[in-house]
Amino acid sequence: MSVAGGLPVGLLLAIHVVSASVQDSDGARSPLLWTRLDHPSVRLIWADAGFAGRLVEWTNQILCRTLEIFRKSPDQRGFAVQPRRWVVERTFSWISMRRRLASDYETNPAHSATMIRRAMTDVILRRLTRGQSTTRPGRRPLRHTS
Image (cartoon, rainbow, N blue to C red; front, side):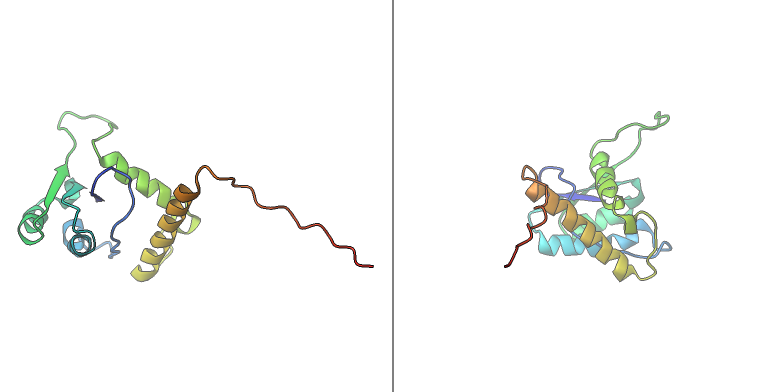
């Protein structure tokens, strides 16, 4: 799910890791509520078809926000870029570049959430330091004491 308050920058506003047995629409309520409380300016939420159904009504009635579902067109064959979906996929790509998140190693959901936060911290730090030298200072010269 991509939550954006303006430009599609792809940064995470809330993280909620649940087991695979939890449906997307059921697991999305907590991060949507956290986003509503922590980022009141967010009015529009984009999600894929996995989040359709009662969650759209719940988001509208309880959170007073708009949950917009992006679906594949019925005549689509093969891969096609969908509006706003690329933001989510790009964010997943940034996260999965971190070795520990390339596969599902964690057994504790809190550990997974922490690893995701660490990966996003790295993404943000790279953006902040973009344009600056990425070289490390060399070894310090040896001092000769006589």
